[in-house]
Amino acid sequence: MSEDTLFAKIIHGELPADIVFQDELVTAFRDINPVAPTHVLIVPNAAIPTVDDVQPEHELALGRLFSAARQIARDEGIAESGYRLIINCRDHGGQEVFHLHMHLLGGKPLGRMHNPPPPTALV
Ligand code: DGP
Image (cartoon, rainbow, N blue to C red):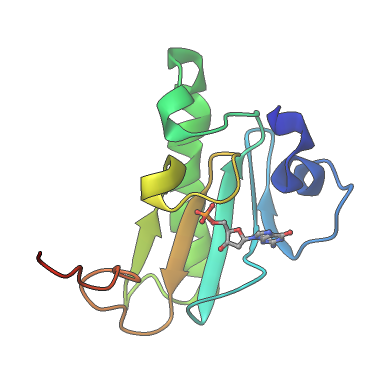
């Protein structure tokens, strides 16, 4: 399933993307629709659809997501000012692309929560 996602195609060089980091475990590229001056997606090269599909054998790659985020934040010059890491899961988490990915956001004050939903009316 996930071998056909947009992100699998980017990882395998079949779709263009602004790749900022790639190694044997993860690939990172700029989000096509950035919501902050730095908005990079960091994805495991393995096809894991969601956080809820994570297995013990994925732990090395998932740890590498954080190491890559730290390095990219330094490369982008936002390590000192700070940044936010987000992983959305399935429908209520707001996940649109079903290849697990971590958003790295920074370069401006982000507030307490990224893109909170509008308040719902109490009935
Ligand atoms: P999420 O809602 O967590 O599944 O975030 C998906 C993100 O992926 C969203 O911010 C837009 C981004 N995105 C979707 N399609 C593409 C694409 O083809 N290229 C790039 N670079 N980003 C994409």
